Length: 163
Image (cartoon, rainbow, N blue to C red; front, side, top):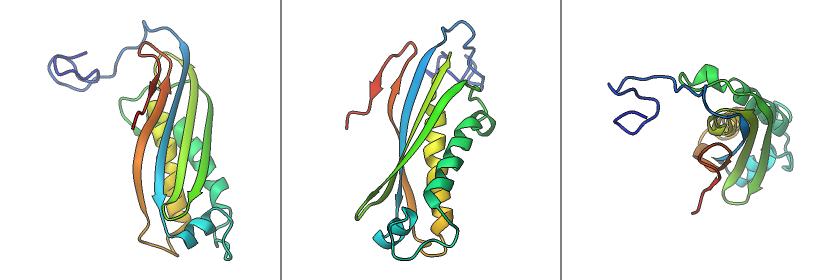
C-alpha cells in the first residue's frame, strides 16, 4: 500500500498494478446490484409480463448474457484490474413496482484477488442492456445505485453492506 492509502498507487502516487503473486488462492465471491428506474409499464415489458412485448426480444435473457460476458472481460475494461479465474457468474432481475428493476450479479472465482469489479461490471452492463432494449419506449429511464452488497474470501474475509 502506498503512503496515500491506496493499493493501486506506488509511494510516488503513480498508478500501478498490485502484485498478488504471494497471495493464497482462495474461493472468492462478490454480489453487486444496480437499479434500472423505469415506469411500471416499461418494467413489465422488460420482464416479459407486460401486455406489449418488446420489439427486440427477450430482454432478461439478453441482459443476463451481456452481464456474464462483461464480467468475463472486466480486466479488459478496467486498466488495473486483474484477470481472474471465474467459476460462475449469475444475474438475477426482480421487478419492484414503483421502482423499476433491481439487477443482482453474483461472481465466484478461485483466485488470488477478489471479484468485486466483475460483479459490479456485470450488474452495470446488464442494466445498460435493459436500458438499450427499452429506450425506444422510455428515454427517461435511469441507472442508479450500482453498489457492492457483499464479498467473501481472501485476507479481508466477509463483508456485508449494513445499511
